[in-house]
Length: 330
Image (cartoon, rainbow, N blue to C red):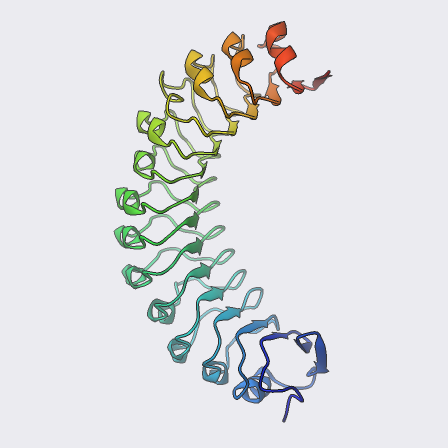
């Protein structure tokens, strides 16, 4: 069965049809194995299969030119061992399948730079992930992970790590070795502490929302590259004095739905802050230091049963203030 396309094919999408560079050919009656055999001799770089697959045919492993493979939104429960032959892969997407165990053949794809395993049912990661030394983006959100192996600290090329919506109770201190990490999302887990964050010097975005944190480590003040910080939905009653001293690049700070009684006066160090969300706490009075923040344009606070109307100097400073359900614009 021929595809009718030249050997210069770059992209293929297998759904009910095959789409390559804008051309479509009907493969509704063909099996994925037949399609893969037809493509094996083509110079494919990118391939997306969304076919409701429960098993992957070994013929796919013969498309050795592949650099990007998207197998998201199928019904895969395992990856066959022959997929180790796809040694040119730099991106692999296994999003929204039925994996309950980490697919071990992936550990041999040492050229991978992006690996997405979101929306599966993974309970643990193998120590073999330490072989993925070139991995830069690692998506593990919406799984069933309760712990992480210390070998995560070997993935020193990582720049983005997504662990939200798992069942993690702690993050190993080995994570502190991920010195190139720019984005870390561990929201909606069961973390009670986060001692590892102070060592991640290049973090630009940190999301710890929806955990069980009662305090924030003072080491977080060392994150001078931090641009966005999310701490909402925890159990914080106070913030350490001096926390904001080194966060001169912070533009977004979200601390909603905690039990804070006040904000520290050293919030005035946040000279780049554009958005501040502190609603859902027990803050009675906003610090007047907020009026000194030159970039602050959005502020949300409340509820009204705790918070008095902010000083006029603050309202004059920001463009958009939300207090409970009342909105003040000027």
